[in-house]
Image (cartoon, rainbow, N blue to C red):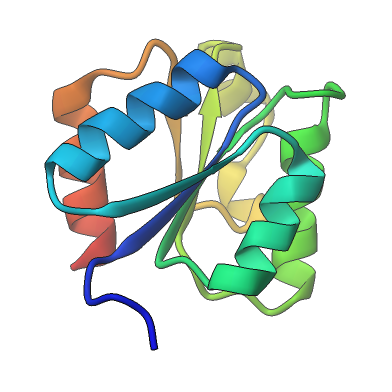
Amino acid sequence: MRNAKPLILTVDDDQDILDFFQMVLEAEGYEVIGAATAEDGLRCYKERHPDLVFVDLMMEEVDAGAGLVKELQALGSQTPIYMVTSVGDSFNQTLDYSELGLKGVLQKPVEIKNLLRLVKSALS
């Protein structure tokens, strides 16, 4: 049986981003697991069944994040998934993130206040 704390999975190939999410979210009482590749993220998802997922759009391959999201959707995931990207507003203009099954997009650099508000909303 899992701990009563909500579990958040972050998938990003940038260790600084993984550390940022872990530091900020654990300070707020969440349990956080990080994965540096889409493959590791999928494995963590299957093993731990997180309550919320953040996925970097561009990791080891340009579309690795989008591919991971599609794999999670193929598994029948009902977990809220947010894409984290440094691509900019062009991502929102060229792609309908809801078509990928995303709840939304979080722009890098991530602002702590926005992150915490989003997490609280997604888990309520």
